[in-house]
Length: 223
Length: 260
Image 1 (cartoon, each protein chain N blue to C red):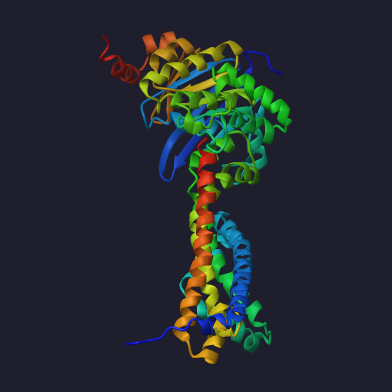
Image 2 (image 1 turned 120 degrees about the vertical axis):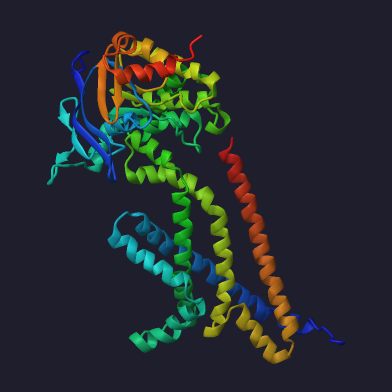
């Protein structure tokens, strides 16, 4: 098969693709922020020790962990207007879906990190007379944060890749931009290869930075 | 308020159950200021649980705890006691605890570990907390290790930092829960030495231990627990050398069986 690759077709439309990548990154950063905020609340509810708080949080988490993310996107974009007459622009709908869905995962990351701190640490803090909030802030969270780092990065990378589903809402992120270029150039192979390359570059560099930060954290912890 | 000899801690009819297992079956105990009490007993006798009930790390199932004449907790419906978080925090700030596993904060230096209580519980200034922390580290012989993280210290050194951390709160009562049980044998001596040196402060101390020889020299009073009850209570000379109860004798025999 003598397929002739033509990456110039992509290069000519690089501005569209890069604009899409910009939107992908914006959606990712906002999604992580929303996910972390809601996830923190969910984790606190799960750990509160009160059933009235922990059970709803558990139900929420389990629901979002066990349903396809594309459905969540469709709900916020197509479902809300039908059910409540509330129409969200594609970005807001994608952000809501992404934030809420990733919150379930971030909640588990936070909860896992906090629970991984030995009971002896809680007891040592309590034995000094420290209140719950102070104990959490001074003793537990600094230790939990280090253990959360790796799974947190992992979940964030998943989230960045999940943003591509926003293309289904006609949100102009990288995949949607790629589809636009494909319809103009009929070069799907080249376009999607470049898209994969772009994601690889972004996530691989991010993981290098994360690894460097983690190593630095480990060194600081073991002085 | 702090006269040596008056009762500092009183326990009345203390019970503690875990599920359907009753570990403490009615403990009555009066601790006088300045007493050094060693608590002995085989594993499962409830000695650690008793100690942990004294600063309410374990919630007693029933009974009363009185510190300095003030009852801890409010009687609740059904015969139990309700403890408020703030009240427990105040109690624990006055009743120090040294754990078997040290439980130092691994993300802090030795100095920061000792500073933490005065800083965040007693509200001392950073400079003052640092000064007293340094003094307490020197007291346990670790003035030179102030900037070391726990991971860089031996077990014995870690336990000495933990003792300094408890001392920094200037507690009225200091509890030791098998402080040398997880140490290599050659490190036991340095920790016992530090604990022994604290005797001269006249601080009230309760120590759960398996080191009978140390208990004999250190304690002013020995309790022998058996199946959740105090079976024997008296001066070391009497309890260790001429115990009244057969069970105490059998317990002591096990420790002296291989004497050479």
